[in-house]
Image (cartoon, rainbow, N blue to C red; front, side, top):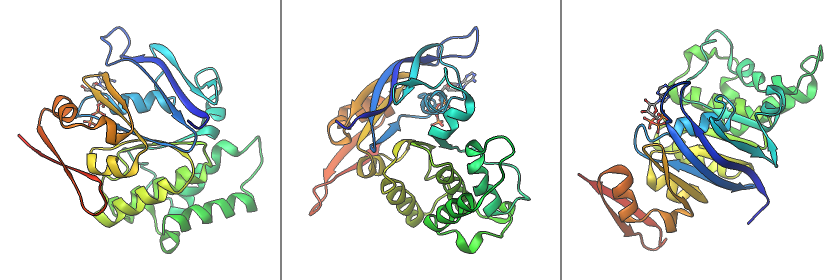
Length: 257
Ligand SMILES: Nc1ncnc2c1ncn2[C@@H]1O[C@H](COP(=O)(O)OP(=O)(O)OP(=O)(O)O)[C@@H](O)[C@H]1O
């Protein structure tokens, strides 16, 4: 296995004074690998991701990035290592697309240092990777849901993180843009942790999956090993069937009640 980029050790969380929502969960993500977090509505996927991008402080356990506890480092140091693309989008609708993407450079500024030529280059490169150069001067509020989602991925890339966390990155995207965004993030060489509802996409685009059910980790490992008909049935309360597609030999999942 590649060097461990992120390790979750006995991680759990619940609101103060209330019951635990995410029970103790441990896993490792190798550098450059893609982990898909899957599970039914309310299984705890977003809660886990919030712990990983340092929005929640764990009730127990730690999140280690390159062996360092992200809750023991400052917010800025953590933001230089981890970027997140969330389902909630910014409300600064008046900013244009280039300005929103440029916000990704914030953790790299120090003191009074301004926005320099290198920052501009990184922003332009992120816009171009997401096919957004034609939108650079449009105000964010005038974009479609899918275009906004691509802007948020570009902002995260401008942050130059080691680890990219995405909460349902294919939401709002048409099927072509779903495939494009997942192909793009796969080609970035970053360590990626993403929640995904579509098990066929998780099967094709991830190296490992973590299956959550009611706040518990049910299984972790390569999708072709972990995503069995029994496990999908248990985690999603549906009857699942796996067919093998020819000539690719890939698994294809179908479900019924
Ligand atoms: N701050 C909170 N206070 C109380 N309950 C919460 C809080 N955050 C999440 N929950 C509850 O914890 C459970 C897990 O929520 P979470 O958003 O992590 O699920 P999810 O797997 O991301 O679901 P979905 O697929 O619907 O987005 C849900 O029942 C949710 O209502």
